Amino acid sequence: MRPLGPASEAPAGPRSPHLMVAFVTVTVLAVGSALSPPHMLLFGMVAIGTAFAGASARPRGVLAVGCYAFVAAFAVSTWQGMLGTPDQILRLLLVAGIIPISWAIALHLRLLLRATAEAAGERGMLAAIVEQSTDAIIALGLDGTVLKWNAGAEGLYGYRAAEMIGESFTRVLPAERLPVYERWLAELNAGKHVILDEAPRIRSDGTAFLVSVAAAPIRDESGRVIAAATTERDITAKKRREAEERQALERSARAARMESLGQLAGGVAHDFNNLLAIILNYADFLTDEVTADGRRDLDRIRDAADRARSLTGQLLLFARQEPTQVENVDLNEVVSSSSELLSRSIGTNIELVCRTHDQPLPVRANRGRLDQILLNLVINARDAMPDGGMVVVGTGPTPDGGTRLTVADTGCGMTAEVRDRLFEPFFTTKPADRGTGLGLATVYGIVEDAGGHIGVESSPGAGTTFTVELPRADGPAPGAAGTSAAGPSQGHGEHVVVLEDEDFVRDAVLRILRENGFRTTALNEHDPAATVLDDADLLIADIALRHRSGPEVAAGLRRHHPGLRVLFMSGYSERDLRDRYQLDDSVRIVPKPFTAAELLAAVGDTLAPTAADSGRGRPG
Ligand SMILES: Nc1ncnc2c1ncn2[C@@H]1O[C@H](COP(=O)(O)OP(=O)(O)OP(=O)(O)O)[C@@H](O)[C@H]1O
Ligand SMILES: [Mg+2]
Image (cartoon, rainbow, N blue to C red):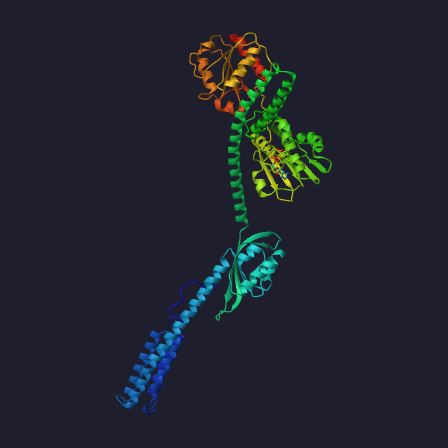
């Protein structure tokens, strides 16, 4: 390739052959005319030398030769005795006249050569740009035949220029793309530009990839389109990155949405639990005071309250605020032991296939909740296949060392809008009597609570696959905390002080305790004297009081009554509360809503002698 640079000043080198010839010509003609007889008047011939110099394209050189020829003609003719004669003057005028003409020719030639050199330089530069570009730059004839195929195109497509030049460009296009290609070729032939943000292509090894395309017509001097130049850039990686970024954004937006929904659901469930505690307990109190008919009505109230309790339980599961006991469970075992129940739940026109991994897949989770995940996903799959189909439940390891549970169906699939809202509580596309929309919300809560993730792949008509990823358990399961050891306890006059700002709940607690043999006192949240505690055996305190927290009040009271036993009540998640108020496992919490039996059992537990008591004696 020619070196790139500005067009050279003089096309010929400093020792231009034309000038040399011109000087020699002048010298030879001058000598020849000097030696010939004077009447031959040959000295005017030296003008030929100047004319030769014109070909050098060096105007200054021409001037030099011209002056030399003029001086030589003048010297020779003067020496021959013609000074001042008309012959001498005429010929000298001729020699002088040739000088500007030759100079003009040299100048013109020089401009011409410079322009040519510049054009060649530009072409060289363009060729270098085309060759060194990492983009594919391809020239196509009007019929789509490849005319030029740069190194970028070789790298991108895997075909060498020799393999492609003269071939049709359709060789690198997927068949279904041909109509689009025909269209844009026609547009290029009509002199239009074509820009495509994304177009599929096929490499020499058959792999598909995506390019962006900018194509423009190439015209000849008369403006007629004679070819097309197209620049293509591989955007596969960019597209993948964009999709990943979009997914990450969607994931974090979903996580944030679910988090706030979880807080909302948790708050609602807490308030409902308070109300349910009142409903359930007062229904119990009434039982002995009403007629048989009234008792039936009360049973209905209790049934409804129990159903509401299970709903708030599901909400708390979604909000990840439901305490749970975890153990090490093999995912394979969860699937195989549920398979019978699952096949019974899905009916006969749906085939259930279980594909468990051949190695154990231990996860740390609550067994019942894993069953709940599986059942929810399989029931959803069943509902998506009213005309029958297949559900495949599989387990396996994940590449990062975790475990994976998949439930794939061949059902109706779902739209992007449904997929987006799937895990929201109360989101359902089913009729009101068929779905509450809490199934996947609880699955989501359980999975996230276990430190895992749930994902879904689905599109309308193409079935659905749910993938649950859970971390692998690599140690013994932590021991269960806070379980109740004793059954409902009867009081024997023990003094229990109750701190609860919800009047109806407080009254219910006092009444349950009184009716079961305890002495009771209600304590005000702001009662600093708290002398009632001097002979108290137990303080029962709500955790989230209106102005202060139960643990804070209890800690203050304990400073004066160090041996005071405390039982907390709350409608919030136990784990959440333990974290927030730094309550260790020895502190008991009775979850709301509770029945009389549950409250009495917790009271009995708290009052039962512990190992610590044997050392210091029981207070009160
Ligand atoms: N396998 C699936 N195929 C197609 N759509 C599904 C699938 N699983 C869930 N969905 C869609 O997601 C929605 C929410 O599911 P979710 O389990 O949370 O509630 P539900 O099944 O409607 O009611 P519930 O489970 O509380 O009885 C469903 O109504 C349905 O539209
Ligand atoms: Mg469901």
